[in-house]
Image (cartoon, rainbow, N blue to C red; front, side, top):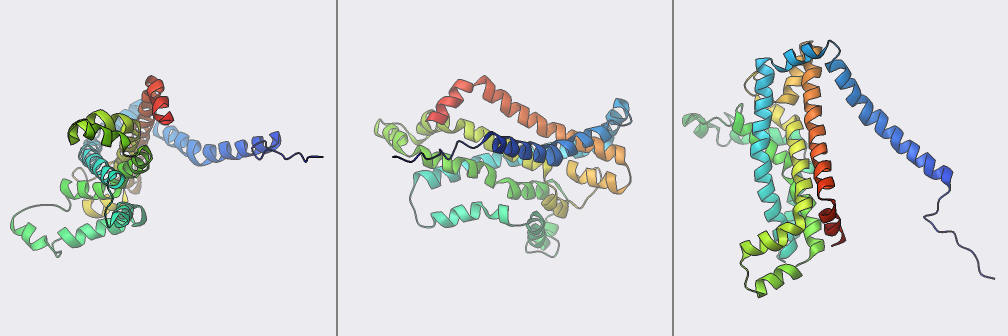
Length: 283
């Protein structure tokens, strides 16, 4: 008489409901509830108060600075991420493991430490500080320092999304294109890019969200100059420390809106190109 073995994936209904309830409860308490409270406090005194808080010159300056820093850092990290993923996935060379480890470095180094490194390098008493002062070049407490700090903390995102994807895709299609006489640029545009476009989009969205929300490294290199070097996260802290709770929650709500917009854009593109996305997943 043969024994009947239970399929390990056929769990009892009560266990499925319990795990689902735990997951939903975790999301509701730690994610949705704080987000809802931010919007509640932001609009507690009405829409007019919220709009007036956003229209403050210092707030508009912080929004502009955050968008500029992200607009510079994200494209640069996209180019780096594609190049690094291509190099790691398509070529064999000594030191590949070291390169992958270096890409992951910002995940393990505190953003505050990253900011301090830039201070040691570009500060008045740093390695290049005297030369920068002599030539009136401002890195710290200015846009270049903020952009450098943002690039450091966000550059792994695109690369880490693309590396496993391109490794899984292999080299066969690129080698076939090269055999047929395609140049490197033609191979990338017509073969590689169509296969990685969804992963690339996801990595860019993650990179952009992280760039807009960065606090630690930017806090060290910015100097907290109100209306000049304060990004949105830094401006939230400044307003909160000055007991301007309405303004702080208004800017925080704006940050949350940008994050939700990023998520909505990702979902919209996935819905609009669902067939192509499913085909790429099957690939």
